[in-house]
Length: 321
Ligand code: SAM
Ligand code: SF4
Image (cartoon, rainbow, N blue to C red; front, top):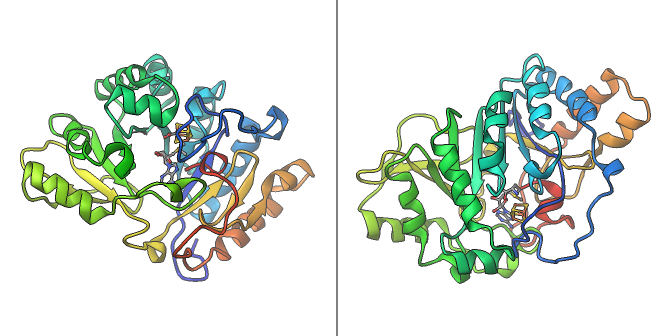
């Protein structure tokens, strides 16, 4: 359906947990972060109930995220269930990749349509510093398993930060050169601890990649359902993409809403507003009431996000990036 600003909302990001086995400093910096008790997380039945409403309002594509979605027990079972929901056409997942090699077969069997792996550095020391865990080898095994899998859409997401990977962007982009992995650069957003890092804007990343590989040209074809713009570098098999919420405010074409792990339906990443679906689900709301709540949240989606710090106190791992 369309919101009040005529944007077509057809995509939902569902966070299945706020727990994670990494501690990326810009997302979940503290060792002792408070996490939700199990009973506060939406159950698979509750997530499925919400998803049954979605096609009725025109949402047919779902991304599972977190926290780290692969630490939620039974995630493959949830994928199998969501794939069976009438009208849902695509279920994809975004992961830090640490558990991917061991889980990829069950994710494939569940029918996952695409997987994004997040990786900001290929240097073991930097990875250890940024994520506060020494798990780079596991992530690289996960990426290898992904490249040799039959999963259709596979992508690598990287957040450029001068302090961590400013001199490594070409090396990261090169992962797209001879493989079917698209590599995307996502501008750091001022959500949670994001504002504490030196964000590298899209144009600077492009300049560094052009200096390393030669001029890039807009890529032909469709590579995803979001705001990324894709380009081909000379001699590359797969494209590089840019998601630049700060350089190019893409609010006028935003197509998504988000469900937090504790069942709060958010219409914009940068604002705290939305609807407590968990309360509705647990107080006996029927389909009609849930449907109306989802429609109301979509309708009230803000026109655009603020320029500076987000008006949202939740951190990224509590929302689902
Ligand atoms: N744990 C999974 C992962 O790392 O892919 C899924 C959740 S994580 C919050 C999703 C994505 O959000 C990651 O690619 C991460 O780099 C990104 N992210 C977290 N905080 C961010 C911020 N402030 N700005 C931009 N991207 C951010
Ligand atoms: Fe965990 Fe992903 Fe946040 Fe890193 S970005 S701490 S992997 S949820």
